[in-house]
Image 1 (cartoon, rainbow, N blue to C red):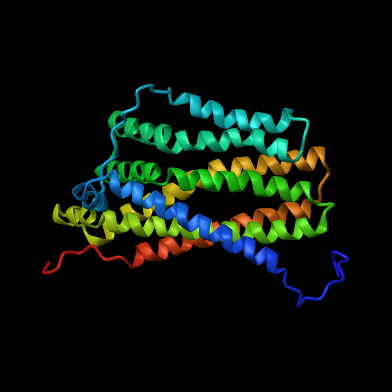
Image 2: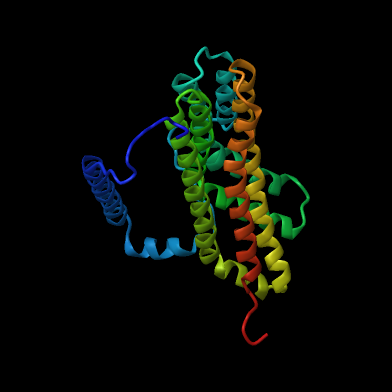
Length: 288
């Protein structure tokens, strides 16, 4: 009724389902091929070792790009929002410079900065461990961060641009909720994998005298640090997009609030789930 569409709800487009089936099969084939290629390019011993990664990978790049370039790229994406003439696909593409720069931020700039803080500042042992673990987690989650940044840029842009196309507008809202929940579940799963990889690492901390409560505190700080950085980098972009459309397109403030909730609620729930999981973990040694 809202879209003024008069169509039976029992109508199914079998051609569409056929196309979706072919698409799913193609995606599965590509994923299987990628996994086979990964296994063939790694020895069995390295695959087993990767299960317990607790150190950062060495930088073997031939051409090393200065870390500040990624910061410039991030803010260049913000600049593109305010100088671009289009407020649709062209706007989103220009802004995606920031999402691409997020890859370098989370894989190089932030880990390197955290490591420099550990080396240059007179930190307590607990903070040194937290920063090291956080830097490693950032590197391991780099692609996931890029997907989140792309969602933060593209989804609000298309939602704000489609306010006069009711059917597409509703579909984009539904897509925003689904995509954000999938990304949030991926972040939670990434923390589950991290807990498995660092299981022996945390047990070693208990062996050197830390209590289970102190080890949990280190684990909490790692999770809080990740979400703190994520809220900052993603929040700046989504607020900038909202302000741009509010100023230049005069969109409804209520729509901005709905879009913000579609991001804040899933990621806030994911952060709370990660906290509960970390709270339930036990690192105490048996027999102590």
